[in-house]
Length: 198
Image (cartoon, rainbow, N blue to C red; front, top):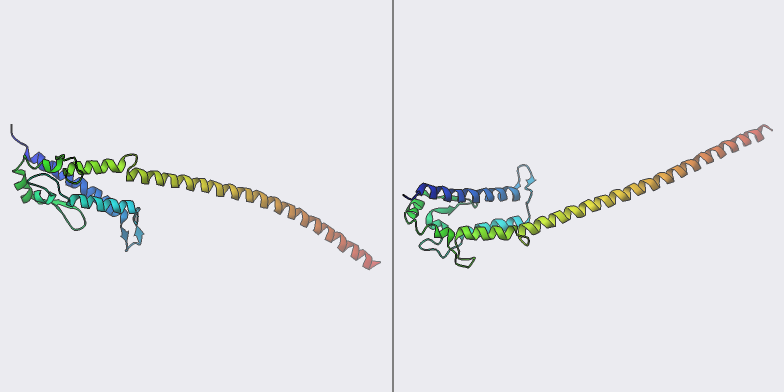
């Protein structure tokens, strides 16, 4: 039985790819394209930009793991723009110290600031999506806003329908009054014509 070092690298690369996919999604949703003058869906949204900043900060933090305390110690490096890349040479050297490498991701210190990166991200993600989390709270707020907007649209439509009925009744009454006045005018004109003849 031997250690499958390739599987270790595959898992670490999967971690990097997943982080980069989240970073790309957030970047696209919050950017402004000056060429097309188009804003991303979440451009200017404090929750989305806060999430971006929190993720980047988390990737730069340290753990209580030894001898590795930062992702950069094992070749996981942050690039300009916030994406992670794997420095193969550095990672190969870190992989040789296999007993220490997993603890960089899994060490449990009981403190959110010093535990392994895998645990930090798991705790962070659970905090986002639990019932009191940022994403859940934001989602609930958006749904309530949609409901308020729908109710307001229904009220406006109801007011418009009632106004239409009222204006139509007023128009019909005015039309009937104008018809009567036209009839009276025709009668008066006829009487004057008769008086002029006599």
